[in-house]
Length: 426
Ligand SMILES: NC(=O)CC[C@H](N)C(=O)O
Image (cartoon, rainbow, N blue to C red; front, side, top):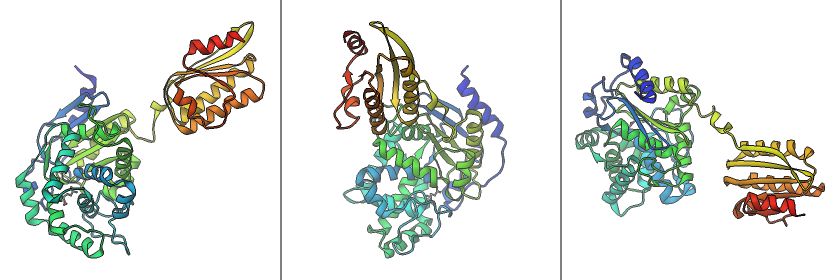
């Protein structure tokens, strides 16, 4: 018995009977999908996979490929260059809309077809074969196994995908696509026809959630900043014209595709995927959307709801007697971002009036300090010293230096013992 799997089972059971939506048939080969295929999978940051239903049925990525190829383009060119070619504004249009920015001809964002085709063209390569080889290798690294192409689906879209061809030619004439339209669209069709399972998709989503590191294989697939950027674009544009409502109800960066796949990522928490072919009017999987809504509600998954951040940072705020004088000892752990920093400042303020002998700040269990908190911490200690208190920090050298170039007025030590010994020595 596993309670995590049980809760996925419960959602699956509740939604399996949902009969709304239509299987996409504009790509003829997709029309044959079984409307009862329905799988859910979730991968934790520890790389544990949970699944229910038909989570091992293969299907094609379609638009779920878009964020991953965008991440590849970002790592090839950097964000500034990619932004010059593809925007990041939600279009409010359907996925296949013929809409380009007036003037520049730049597609609105990389999650609609026009933007995805332009993104595919940005992948660095020696020719089309090499470009697809790099895309497939990167998608495989995201999934943590060698993926392949469903040739029948590829051929079917290649034979019928005139709207996408039209988009490519339009961008070419507007100057926003510099590559060959036929070749680019062909690579895009292949990328859409890459075959995955729901379980693969959950690993791919979890890799973005884990800052670009595949939590199952341990392999770094994209840099942390590029993973964050990709999630940001998914959050604003991933659900096409349903993106706003999705953010309101579910609140997770997500991406859907016309074969019925849907991924969502809880940053630093989990990756989740659903597959169910019947689609709503926006082209999003009906059961996929319903399953994510149900899970978000039951588990508080919305990114604007972050109780995790309230985890104990300040692990101790105490008074010690040192040579007959009271000193304060404040201990913190983990990562010092804004919220933790604010709590630390508060703890220091609470303890100092009762500790005229000075303050020891033990940050030896702190793993990361952002520049803002580092400077703020240095300022607090400077202020204490200016007001006649003694102050010492025990922390890694890098954290002490992150406080800025101004001459330090307080003491710095590597260990808590050294800082406390200093306190006793004066
Ligand atoms: N929304 C989608 O999944 C669209 C992908 C599909 N290959 C297309 O270009 O039409």
